[in-house]
Length: 79
Image (cartoon, rainbow, N blue to C red):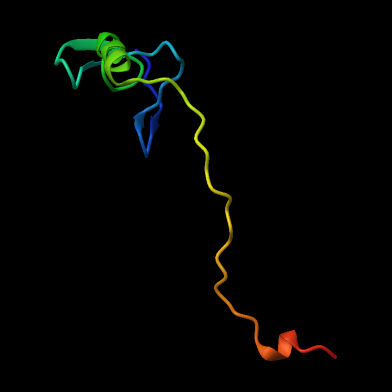
């Protein structure tokens, strides 16, 4: 039995994309095996169907930087 490397930040590291964790789905409370914690595949499909929408282009106003410093009279003086 080999030990998995442990990171100080996140606990056991996942060496490959095929490493699966067993946990309880936070939405339907069923036990699932998945790579990352979150809703199970059936719950994700249901959420996409009910809450998902079509992507759309959002028009954003042009960015104008804020002027925090006003120029003084010496800097504006013409020689």
